[in-house]
Image (tube, rainbow, N blue to C red; front, side, top):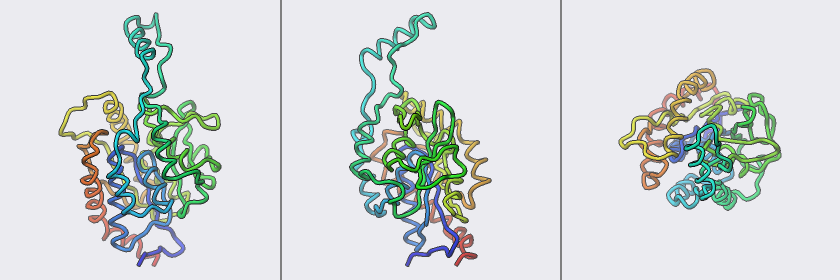
Length: 298
């Protein structure tokens, strides 16, 4: 039996985290086992992926299957050419006297990722999702917070209501420097985590009075060294956003769940089952507190 929270709404804000975003599947798995189902969702980056798929009707079991089948070919299509590489090398050698001319806006085009998302979500719009859902991106030109949703989000600078879910997720998951930004309606859109790693305020905008935030947090305590440009960029963004996220969630979330997954890189696809299990365990520990928060609304 699913617990619906009366006229008030129990919403989930799913945070960014690359492959660690599979922990959100474990969170949903735990909630469903306890008969708890969110009535609205919001997400940034990896959280946007899980939120959109769940709201589109994918079951937790189906989400788990998709995560286990995920591999690099579905995510990465190189944007580097010999011409851009030589241009970069020329810029390094010459310095300011000779700037690179043909560098891409991201190491990865994002076309493979968008194609994969389209195979899962088609041309569906946010208004057609089974649960009210919003995902967050940022216009890198202006710094504006850009929400994708079926109606205006008061906490965002811009809300795009006519875009497809795929466009929203593609924009929200465009890690700066890694994925090329999504050019859409005159905006140059990158990862929503640049503005809010866990977009709890968007869940408020959707009408939730009980907001549960899943914060995958700073992935700094690693067992292995950071050893690639992608991981350097990703780790740097997590470090930069850690304190901001804490401050934001103190004001916007009723319950923050932190799986504390520190030691997973962007290439550790084989560890997805472990990541899901750790998300499930973290949510399980917070179920008593969540039930107390929901008591006034039964």
